[in-house]
Length: 552
Image (cartoon, rainbow, N blue to C red; front, side, top):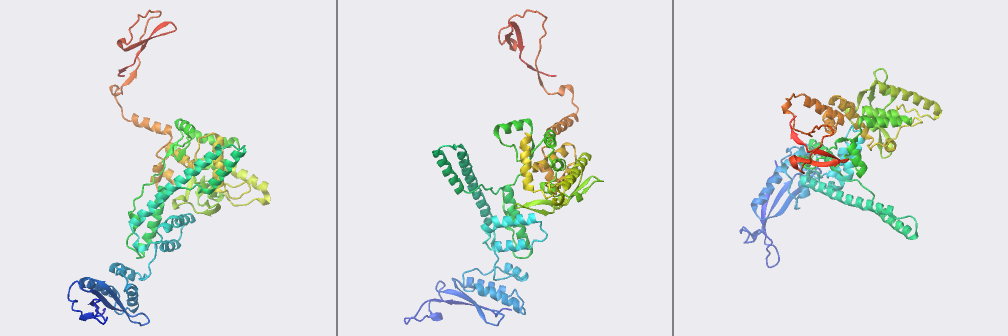
């Protein structure tokens, strides 16, 4: 057990010769005179050196004794025969002895002591995040890069300096408030740059004065910050998820006991709903230039028009766009699919790999999620399209000869090399514009496939598995909007399920028609009489009856 410490009262009174009175001061018995101090012998260092814990400045013996009891309790965490453990506790108390730092919490110190953590060195959030990310095993490169981005761009700059065991919810509230303020700055800077570019377009090219204005405007634009993306609600949710995962690991290792990220409230990130390009929405888009939703879906007719457009021009990647349109592959999955993943006999395609961008470099990786590794059934027509494509690719192989690069991919460049996902997206957008169709993103072809399957009555579970979603709820959330005709048919079928009597039909507006003999003379009727209005047509008098509400 730990040797009992002592509490001592002293003052700073001195004798006439300048020497301190010490314990002989007659005023020490007064409660408000002097200050109390504590003294506790600590376990020796591993080298055998003796040391003491001293602290002064207490205004009462009760407070001094309370801190002394805390010190003795900490020393008793280690067994009396645990030399190394008692030395570690001695190191902790010696490091804070005469300072103003609070005596460490007993429960926290005991937890750290029991898990073998350092008692004198305190890890920061940044240090722990780096250690946590380095220890993540089995991560896909895309997942690792996303974690690293959250840490590098947001977590380390804003909360990295804070001690890990002292991270609180207010710290995180302040971090996300800072992100919101930065978003405002980015939005304003983007607007300023956009306005300057718009003004530059209005300045004529000819004339010395105009050239000088254009030069000055360009210099001003070059000095502005480039266009930047704000950190939206979805990204903020991901930042919190990254921190929450890191802190959960810290809790599992005994480094902390509280996960502040679990208690931060953020605005919900709403997943955009898929909307169909109806005639009304196309007209509004042509008028305003704005898409009704971030996720737009073509109707079956529009999708067919696009594929026919590619067929008319005999575009070599028509089979790829056909496969995405009907089976909903992701862009990287379509670029990465191999002939070896295709079973001609069963008409099945295995999604086992993808090509993704890392910066601008293209790398091969596993599908986005575990559920992304899936087997897709193909219809007979799609099988015919792929077989025709195999024949055409064989002809390209012969044409290129030794210059052909055998990657084994189903869809390649003309010389057999990988398709670059970014280049493919640019090509798709140009093709959509040339086709005259309303715009969709290349990823929206995947949404077209989902909507086509749902409109055809395919069970949502099968649609989810075909798309490679981890949960069918994701499919439901995104694709609540199906094709208009299918939705109307469903509404009519629902209404037809309930029989109603003739008198239960809704009130209708019916125009009365008055039958008159041929060549009959119509007596003039004063205006507004009987609720009718009068007029003439071609010199003949007519009566226009105003409709009345009648029941069918």
